[in-house]
Structures are given as structure tokens and as C-alpha cells.
Image (cartoon, rainbow, N blue to C red; front, side, top):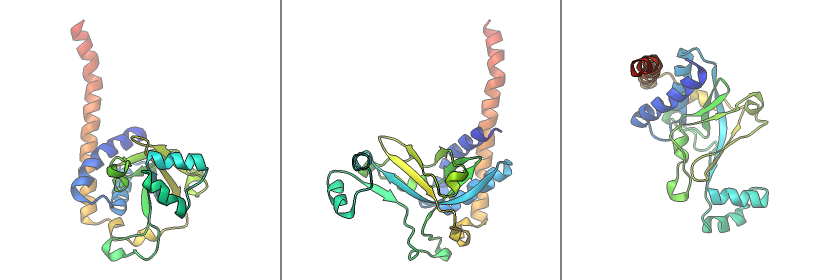
Length: 217
């Protein structure tokens, strides 16, 4: 299975499985599961702590016009005019490993592609921020992993997401959700089963298609 196919199959399968088993704030579980799935497929993958920043179209227009982020005072006018943004909380105070509460956001990097299995937590349709359950970004290279380059991508209806790596942060390793728990292992097996089924279906189409053409002729 090619890496790009595996990532696409994973996104489709995991969107279904993770939604059934975990809350939207599932980045520890989601990343652990993604890593275990990709390791089973013999693909290069690693966890990456990031700061994630999602904003709606109006907020992005303000940033482009100012050439910087709005100040706290300016934000009042931006919000009043319809701007909105969501950013990862990296304050140490909320952290509680035993309760799976962790101040940050965790993603997987699979063959140079950032895979956010918990992107849904940034979804704020009432505020004009539209984000799918799982999102992937190409270009997660060494420069990105070292925190020297930001990854930015437009989503739906003008929503923009940005990720910046936190290369020195490994505090996620103690989080309950990041462990290879029975709950996580069950999700891995279910996702792999769906991925292989999707792959077999695609392969079958490639086999049947030439035969169908011969019959039609």
C-alpha cells in the first residue's frame, strides 16, 4: 500500500472509528492510534507536539491587511465584526495526565505528511470555522519538525489552519490517551480492517475494469 493511499484510507476509516469511540479533543488517543496503524503498515511515522491555530475568513483578512496578528484591543473590534480564531492552549495549568488532560495538541507525521486525527476540535461552524474530522498537510519536513517553518492550509469556506511544531516538548508521553491501552488497540484493529477493505475494493475495481471493457466490446 503506497503511503499516500494509506494516509487517505486512514483518514476515511479513522473519521468513522474515532467519532464512535472518542470525543473531539482526542489528539492523544488519535495520534497514538495513527502511529500504531502506520507502524503496522511499515510506514515511517512519529509524533509531533504542535501549536495549532484555526481562524475564519474575516479574521484571516484582518491579518493580511495588518500584516500581523491583531492586538488584544483590536481583537474586540475583530470579534464584533465577525472574526474568530481558535488556538491550542499550551498553558501548564490545565495538565492532568491521569485524566487525559494535556496542554497542547499532538499530531502524527507520516512519511512527511502531517496527520491531525483530532482536527475536529477546531470546528466552529457558528463562528465560520469549518474543519473536517481529520486533516492532512504535506510538507512536514525537517524544517517544520524543528519549528523553523509553519504549515498553513486553507480549509472550507475560507477557514485557515496553521501548525507550528514544538520540537522540545515531549510532555504528551505521560498522557493516559497516548498509551497503548486496550481501548486504543481495539480502535487500531478496527481502522486497519476498514482500510484493508477499502484497499481491496479499489484493487477489485482495477481488475474488473479491463474485463468489463472487453465484454462491452
